[in-house]
View 1 (cartoon, helix red, strand yellow):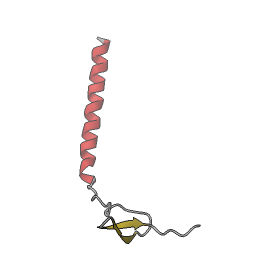
View 2: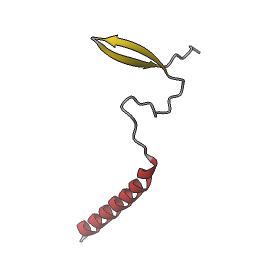
View 3: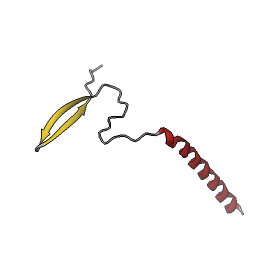
View 4: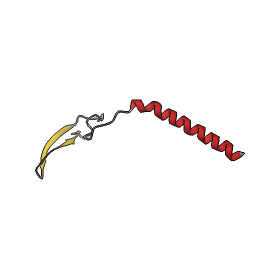
Length: 66
């Protein structure tokens, strides 16, 4: 009988966690592969590169030392 009560409590907690997670799912937006939509703390610059015949760009943050 004790195991049945423990199972019911675990099932109820799992259901509440699932409902809570589903409510927050609408707030999450997917990021692009280059992370351009991520809110970085400093301005992001880009350095164009050509490596092995491929045109690439490297992102960087130029932050002055404190």
